[in-house]
Length: 111
Length: 114
Image (cartoon, rainbow over all chains, first blue to last red):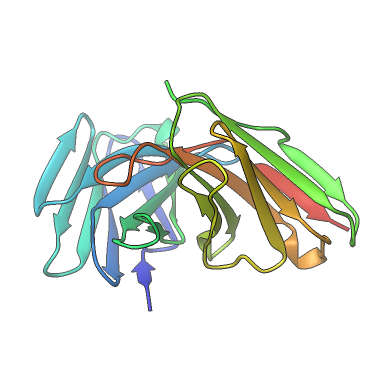
């Protein structure tokens, strides 16, 4: 089967750092994506990892370990507008490079 | 910027009705997808298409069909709507056959079947 697991909810304080973890077990791997989804809006692309290591993009960074089936999204200097759901998705090498999504982590940033 | 437009944000229909959800993308993308999003279950793929007039079943195609007559438009059809099809429906598009290309999503249609 295909499993992509992430915590359901997290809470953090404005200005702090938060790490959202994602573990996956899939039949094949062609890359891992993180999306941000505000309530009632479309998911928007944040980051892509296909090789092990850290990819940094401003306040957001994403890490991948393929041997461990593990990724995390790191958000620094949290702002209130970062309150959203964060979706982890794995691209698999069938169904024309289908993407498998986790259920999402709802992050609440408090003052 | 890629624009994926879904025809309705909110829709209320009755059990047994035939329901059409429309999606249009403006970036000449080859691939288009329909998902439904339910609390605790994440996004589940219903159907996808990688070319005009081509369609492939996803994980949960039962009760749905699709149509792709033009490259920019991908329609989802609920043949006879049932209450368990009440959900958020998301359309997405992407370029090429994978790699680093992300999927781009529309704002979603929240469909209620009464």
